[in-house]
Image (cartoon, rainbow, N blue to C red; front, side, top):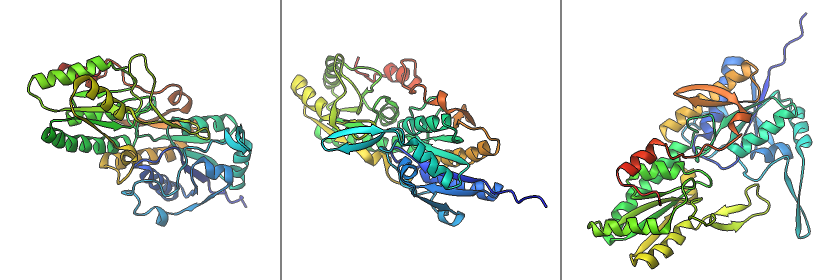
Length: 366
């Protein structure tokens, strides 16, 4: 009698910042794995924190039913946990230790055969390191910033842009009513995709992104020029990581325990102060912050999350390890994780929205 073949057991975690569409991925991976292959699915809780601390539970079709439209992640997440860099506090000092062997041992004790890591550049960089230590890994790209290389879009981005665009629309009416300069500060540490897309969709007059250092003289000239033409208000969309020429990113606070110790924030209020002093025009700022991450995903993000989750399971069936699923030219495929995390995808001067924006008079701070 032939021995009964043991069903593959898939581990899945969601790491980094949350975003709409994560539950769509969890649902697609779980249902596709169980229905099409008879595999088991195991949810690791709170990202890599669950792998380090051995916390997780089985996922069934019943548990993932009805979560497609729900924001956040039913597994929880953490943007602090890194098994290769675990903070250990000794008195007033903090040192970082490598607990990756412990995390891998938990992976084996659970009987997992593959790890599906859903996250951005940080989460996928960690999964790439685990892959080099022998863990079969499949990556799924998630970030509202849309800054992962090798994929045209990441799920969560469309929802974030929709939320930011609605905010620009709402600021438009109050700016016009009070004849003010209104500034919307959106997320975007190193890449300005959210600011560029929401600013373009919302009809912003000035868009400031990390890739194009801005000149305050250019910004103020654009505001005053509109006033001279009888436009009594201006709309500015600025990414949190936008930098003034010769300056640095504005840091709200430092968190030494976090892999990204500098917490950005404050560029909107900085611009308020400078514009009022340089132009005499009343200026206000609004900061969306984590509102961009919350709520139900838009239909495109539900669809993209579903496509990514189902394709990840097919990569597992083909034993295509150390791959990240992606969308390129409308087709869902996979590329090596190492290639995806090798560099950030940033806005370039030849981007069609930059070119079109400048053609219609949008100022990019230069």
